[in-house]
Image (cartoon, rainbow, N blue to C red; front, side, top):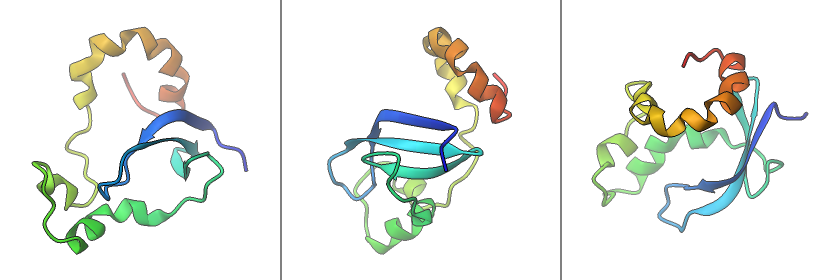
Length: 105
């Protein structure tokens, strides 16, 4: 199956404390379907349960521990608008994807 969108050359941070690395994320039907060194790497749904990994590691020495240890939430939705002026040059490129996934700008 081919992805609707592949983001290449991104910085992948796995939350283990390892050094971030370059990689790809594939998105199909609005969901991540692959993530890793290349978009053909298999998807592991456990990445959505990051709070379990965080709690299992014990104390995380970061100011954002409270955020890392909770399930995925929506209270940050829309915060990107604080940086809208910086994103204005790329919004035309993103418009088809914004529309495809039902977002509003």
